[in-house]
Length: 530
Image 1 (cartoon, rainbow, N blue to C red):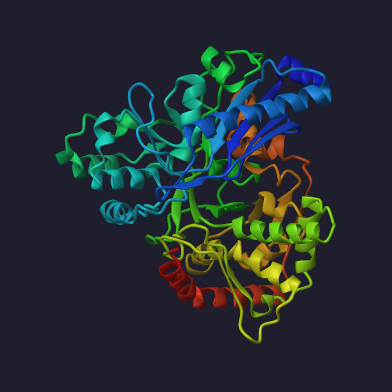
Image 2 (image 1 turned 90 degrees about the horizontal axis):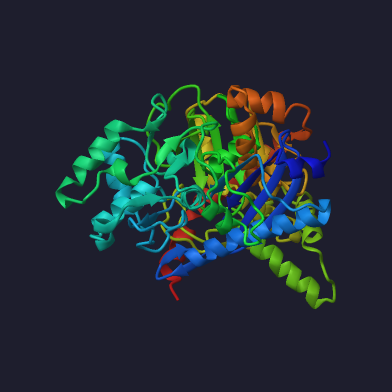
């Protein structure tokens, strides 16, 4: 069938992912080939000390993103989308959205970027003997409890962004197990929230006498391939302002961007790993066995089917790097050059390969927000150098590219060097890898292993969510890892790069500078408060 015929007949799958700076929709056929893309750019706001997006921004962004996809499909194929085989919603993981029984938001949406939950995260980590990061939903919920937030007595549903949108489309209070793993610790045997920890939390807050138990207010947990409801008439109207999209389309369990990143890189089987590099950057390895001990730098999450995954999650990734590229774009315009953003990124990234392996002694921290791995609850973007450093454009860009992987490397070092976690392959995805052979080479130097980037890498999580939607209707009883290996990634082209010994040594030297310079970043946080 032609692409037009596939779209007309609904033999497609749609994935929509809410990223930190872009909402993106990807329409694929059931082989994983991209048929159309839509997007809506946005940015979170710091309101009263909370990183947030308003509900209006969320709703408008979703509709505009879908409208962008619909219009591209109409322009390219001359056909209007009326149905798809399945839909899946994903979003940046973690955070806190609390609703009353009427579906009204009770407190500002808190994104993963917030680090105002230190007291709660510390207490729950001790209670559970399990690392609870500051950005997890349960940490936000308990911090609200510690702060005696009045809205908790009216709370009916506490969830994440993807689960919220899924409910708006289907009426179902569910989420995928990978996303659920950022809400509350998961028992990978039961494929559900850990019941002992649920009981411990209920006992901890019993004196508050809330009109709910923890399970009452959290979304139900589903795994990839399970039915998660269908698009209601209200949901169809909410998503598609043109009124053309039909109700009744099945939805896959919603997922977090960690799970969609695993799918997008074919990294859902034990001994596989991936690095997702964007506004936040995280590295994940699917484990064969539990870690030997608790590490506050390492999150324990799951694949979309429930395998345990060790994650090194850095709140800060490419934001500062993008800001510097923007400065060079302004300079180009000042000089009368209308530089295409893609060409500008490509030129600056490729030129960085001419820099010194250790960045010539230059140092950068792209900390727009707090960074849990380095134990900082706030961030200040910072660039520094020694008087004798080799300060040139190649080293400058190379330092910022290294820095976008700096914090996540510290967590990966724990897994690979201290825990000796076995990994057969590491794949990279996300916008950082769009310029071929640059960030991929630097990541290989950071993890001391070859890194593969598939041709779908720049589509990333939204494509991964679309694949999960396809799996719902076309999985034919296969395990997810077999479905990906045999149907989606079979014959898909990609490239693999290994770093040289010099490049590995250079990144290690940069990491040494990165660790030694952390007191300067801490001092910037303490002193720069205007």
